[in-house]
Image 1 (cartoon, rainbow, N blue to C red):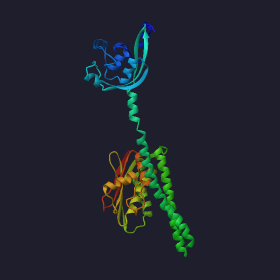
Image 2 (spheres, rainbow, N blue to C red; image 1 turned 180 degrees about the vertical axis):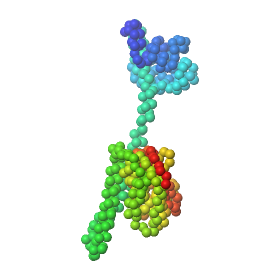
Image 3 (cartoon, rainbow, N blue to C red; image 1 turned 120 degrees about the vertical axis):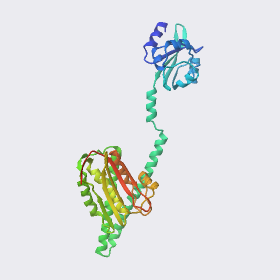
Image 4 (tube, rainbow, N blue to C red; image 1 turned 45 degrees about the vertical axis):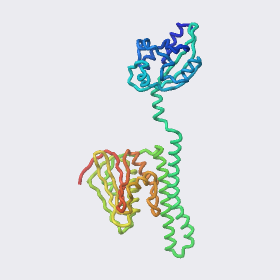
Length: 369
């Protein structure tokens, strides 16, 4: 390759190109892209006497390849603090580093051997990769923990109604009276409903987590919706020692929300409280703030310490050995509220009643009573 050809080549390439002497390491030539890449100008470069062997940023492998006149392909960070500290050359950039992809190869220019570095700035690409990459081991551990917790939870919830169905199906043939047979049939039917609800919740949770379930938001009067929900809840509450208290503060409360999801979450949270409250009261209410709707269900009951309710919501654990597991339903409620960009939680103090609540952002038009 003659001198004219080499000079033309390095100045038409989009990448930064530098030519060094393999013997002394001195910089012989460079193109315009290098000036822009490193924030230097021709005057600075000509005065500094730059050498590949002195530059603190060039890795040893690259320097060895230059000495031995071997081809190399290498990626490495280029730290501006290093060159400032050793006063290697002055750069107008305040940035801390570049990330370079470099190709080194020997060329012969008019009988003179020169070592060519072709450098590409891949800093932006490297930062994107760094942000998006999670170590495989970390991902595997997270999936393993989630799978274990989910399987343990679902196994318990499936086994409870399934054992009841199998057990009482065997007993129903031995019933001595019609009343006894009817009682066994009722227990089987109730547990079949529980099992069906569990399977539905698991399938729905899977759809929501994978993004297949889309919200169906429409304008609705939450005040009317609240009254209708209360009628349904009264029909399932068969505890004479429990008083129902309803807080419906508005004459009209027009909001933009997924009606089916709202009923699903409200019914589930109320159902949890009903299971825990043996006597006393259950209070159900809601209120609006400037940005959304806050709905709550609370009552007298077992209560839980602050540190334990977070464990329930996060890992779907039981509160003690005698209570039915509260896992998949909580996960589904959490997924629904998360999908609406809301908040979901439980406040509880030991020996006092728990308060389950949700807050969902929504547009609203309110008429006070």
